[in-house]
Image 1 (cartoon, rainbow, N blue to C red):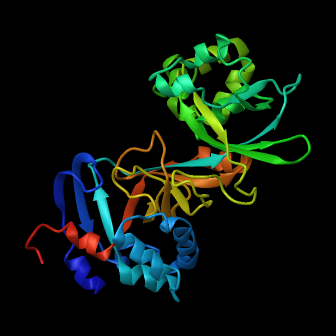
Image 2: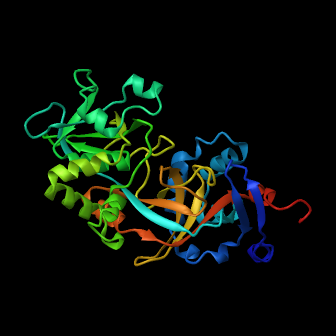
Length: 346
């Protein structure tokens, strides 16, 4: 069957695909033998992550597959019998990056050490788009005395990067944790402070990383504060401590994501909850079946993915080093895959 599918590989260009992506999109059906490393992967691990979110599908094709998955005796057989690999391309090269869940030290009340608040979103920020800039939010006093603080942390630079990641854990002085997730934003476009450092001639592009930026801001506190203000975007949080500390943060499907099995994708091309085979090249190649369970403002395109590495500093270091080419292949329900064929091909 897969030999037949490989021979039947096709390409069809459309201006608007079924998920609403307005772009020149090409679809090619592959066979599972076209996926290097497929036979060696841990399909049972991928199936477990798929089951975490497949119950949220309201589409009958996907719902039927989820029902079968719950009783599937063999994970690899489940994927091979009920899905077909579909390569989606919008003309842009594949790109993989990594992301992680930061851990910050903080407290539930301010002190000399814990002085930098994480805020809930004020109602006027939801009603006005865009609302105040980062500089205005932090210098105007508009947030003061309103009970919008969730916690206070000890490092404004780590707080800035927490906003970029969108979720994280706060380690309290007594050893407990609270978890925070994305609660909204002020509506201003994100501006890269790394690119700004390059524009200013402080670093060359190949030198810039999260650690390099953090160290520069700490060494240059006045200029560093101004650099952070360059990014007018500001992220608010919500507490999501109902998620146990031993599970991953909530993704875009409001379910915990899994280290090295969950990816963030562009849902205009790839349906959230879908299995996605990734072939990441670079220094540490990775061929693995992942599940699309998250999104990100910088994740745009059919061949773009952000790999969730895990929680904490080491995960952050690994994630910060990932910027690799490769390709994504989406596993689609059989009937959905064949529906992409031009009429009359079969």
